[in-house]
Image (cartoon, rainbow over all chains, first blue to last red; front, side, top):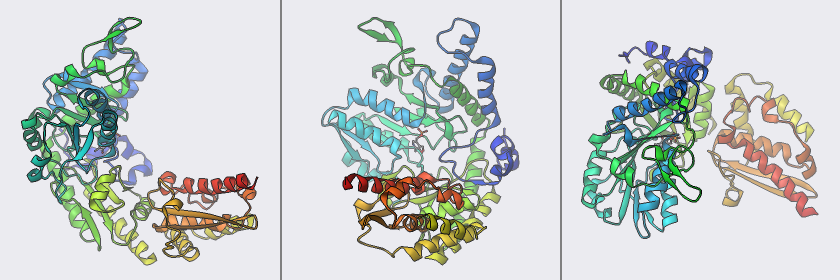
Length: 410
Length: 139
Ligand SMILES: Cc1ncc(COP(=O)(O)O)c(C=O)c1O
């Protein structure tokens, strides 16, 4: 097990931080993507140098071994998120593809004219636009899940929007803007009466909290590999078996067929019927390595370390005059979104970067949350396991310096 | 226009630290461009896709083009002010022919590696489009 309170030790596992002055920067953009441990990087490079071959086809040993490795990632993910079986896991290219897959298969078949898809008004564009598209295509409507001022689901008002017309509810597990988590378990319970399937976007959850889809009780759950120390272009989608069976394929082509005639073909069994074509084999095998890396972390210690960073960040941010922090309760991840009165978020982020502090600014692919907060953008600092107390101090020092510089100019 | 480009490059070469460079950039924007120019800040002048809002408007007089701009962020306002300063008063043909990357020369393009988010490329594209449009309408 890693000792997360020993940040120097953790950083040694990530080659990025060991490479010259790049590693000296304060990297606070982990909600965009995390760095990769050497185990993940070398697994990918080993695959290409020694084991490269396609999967699910070759009868020779190399091909079968690649298939085994690829399939073992599926099994690791099934164990990691607590699904009933590995058959409930579709390997995808990320959270975005996962949402599109469900919208274009489940949505296409089951969302009919006049039906409703409920989406919260605080979703990443990836968990909003695919629903808009299928609703439009099928003549259905998108409606809002009621959200309280504190940015959590308003359970008092939820009942008023639930009905048999609602064919799906889509919500994030952890927000990419505030790091706050939603009570998925309670949402699932509330939806039982009308048997409404619940889709959860877990893109920001996996590297911060323990995911257990069986306990949550949701019907769909997706995440992206690159936000949990894995390669870009990888991800996974959990689909409850009862839905898997009924859903038509997403992409069509090789790999996903059982019988092919010139006029007509039949699909292979799930989950492979959702994985047409040659996938990102090396990436998925690398993702397996990332899951092993996470499983070597004690989640209780992870929670206490990240909470320690969060408390420190909150305390230090409060020292900055005229700083407004958005949604700073129920934090499941050390993600901080803020603005400083009379200073543009772009100016702040650009000058922080001049000072070696890497943060994001803008609408953060979450325009509706910006509208909800009545702002046109903000700065986001997002931390991860390898960020240290010292970096928090350096960040705050740089922030104060930049604010002083910019205040002079307004 | 060549002289104005030279002037900008030599002005900025005086500054070494980021503080001095940005201070100059911000002041340049504040001095050259009007504050809160309401009529300029219209949707039709807005350049879409930038993190900060940038408004850019072009007008022709005696076969020369003149640019007017504004932004709600200080750095972006400085950047667009440089564009206004350089290209205003030039002919459409001159603008299209001019290939000097001023922002690279003054050391801002590499630093502001977020060319996409600050919209620098889009501002330059709009200037170029204005010139192309002018030539098209002239024919
Ligand atoms: C909450 C949330 N959902 C979805 C996504 C999209 O993930 P990906 O780009 O990996 O497809 C992101 C990534 O920024 C996210 O933060």
